[in-house]
Amino acid sequence: MRFQLRQVTALGLALVLIATLSTLTSCRNKKPTAAEERSPVLPLLEDLLKAGKPLFVSPEFLAFIPKQDAALTPTKEESLAAVQDPSFFYRMQREKHFSAIFLSPYAGSMKLANSLLSSPLWSLADVSPSGYIFRPIGAAAWGPPTLELVERIHPDPADRAAWLISTAANLILLGKRDEAEQLLVMTATTRKHPSLLLSTRASLSASRGQWNEAMTLANESLVKDRSNAGARTIQVRALIECGRGDEALEQVRRLVENSPNQESLFLLARAANAAGDQEEEISALNRLVALGTKDHQPLGASLTYLGQAYAKNGERGEALRAFQKAIEAPELSDEQRKMIKELMDHIALEKR
Image 1: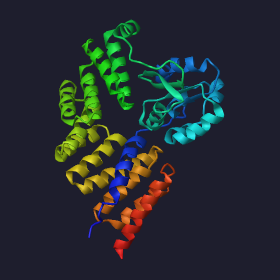
Image 2: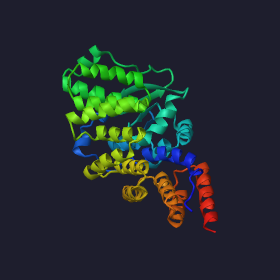
Image 3: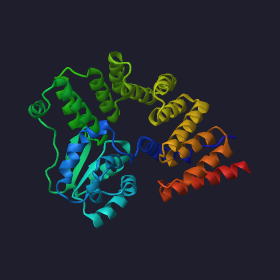
Image 4: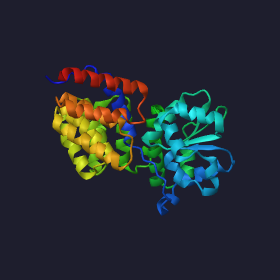
């Protein structure tokens, strides 16, 4: 008899969300490349470092910190721990008294960003394509810029459109949908980057749960640029949400073929699950775990998802092995480990 997944559902929903976050984050401790040295992140960091006070930055930004200012920022290990566990950040804050926080828009930092957004101690002071800057409460709060201001700062229409679209995308990640929509309306006046504008509008619709609209916008985006991976991703997610798993699986296979990264593999696993193709779901998850291992990514969520897939397919031994590895992952909470152990006990009883 195949393993019943009633007990898995709550854990699966929580950890699938973690998987979408943890599999997208990378931390660099190498010397910046020439392109990185020209990054728009640098002026923002230079301005923040001028005060000569402690500054918290996402792991991705540590490569940009000059050696002489390294003492003002956390170590790579501290930064990684803080973005994964906001309570660790708040403990560190009580000791170091950060004057500002500069977080990247990458998925790994969003847990801390959302915590700060609801904190009475911090204010969102700036949003840009580079990420988010938080300052202690009392600082001026960020608000959408006027079109006149954006035109003055970015006189070139293409540059202006790119800035507005990227900033809007980062606002969507924070749940600031109305503000994002304001920027996308401004973008339309430039008549530049139409495919990117449509795919970002699709992302906004998806964040509101408007999946049919998201699918329509993603399809329109792909008509203008078939290589728009963001549009393809939204299209696949929309197909899954609209109960069209077979179509989603067909589309995401193309995405993985062109770009076999952690995000596309996770999406392939989701589509395969929606289409009832358990073998392809397991294959995608194994590839996801292998890639995460190679890239030194947190694996707890992916291994838990893999264990669920094996259990659903009646492969109890493989499920137990995946769950055991998941329990050993440092990023999972004690509560999550407890739930996984309960699942393992349930599988062990069924084997008797």
